[in-house]
Length: 87
Image (cartoon, rainbow, N blue to C red; front, side, top):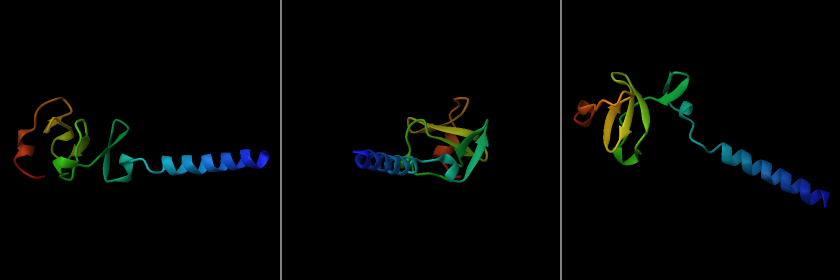
């Protein structure tokens, strides 16, 4: 009985470690810290891989947000130049 309980605890612990190590940590990639938050640097990602609300740090525009297929500043201003040229 004690062996089964111990085995369950060990297996659960290993599973939790594996699950927690698989999350995407923005600080694991090139990033800029803004207000204590790690924001990945913008390196012209493919639009097909982006989700609305994805946030990046751009050298020219600062914090930028991808929404509904367009790029916006963190103040909500549309950045039309980013739809025309690459960084």
